[in-house]
Length: 237
Image (tube, rainbow, N blue to C red; front, top):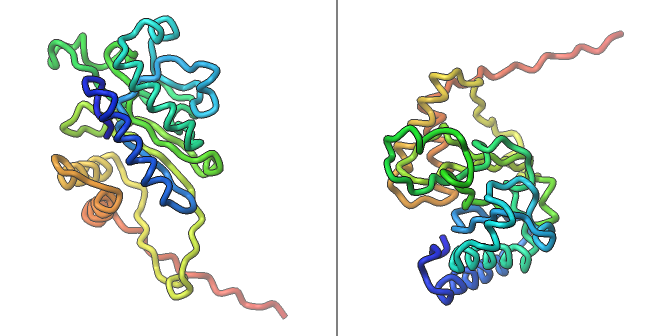
């Protein structure tokens, strides 16, 4: 996570330099996701190479009048995306505002209904978490959306990204039986989400630990599908 707007420019540039170094060592298809502490607010013509129109912001006038530190975070983030030809995935899909916001702004009283729930605008909420992908990987990203219905002990909301990747499977694994689960009803879905939350909440986690948590939650909360027997086809005479 990059330093927030209260930190100096050297720390912020150091974060992006380190991330750029990590990216330079990657090969093939990759995705970058996380909290970038950057509020875009308005998509200028020069931003359209990496940013789509679907953002949460206060518009052009606010962009040009906002404080220097916040503008600096925005410029560093977009500059990073442009330098590596990375698209901002969650700006590419048209969504209602509650599916675009990823962060709850600091408000006077958490229990005051005026500061919770709708409207999901750039005053009470923000869009500062993003999924990024290379231009060549754009077609592999099917959808992204914020999940306000999944609660963590955080001001941030989970940001889902659905991708389809063709992976070469080793020959010995081709015939292995994958575990399939039946479509969950609301009760099983809630139980599974609660299990994931209990496994990850308050911990530092990466893709591997997140995947393991999802697998463990599914195994303990969801119902497996019964394996379907292949029908034998008898040749006609």
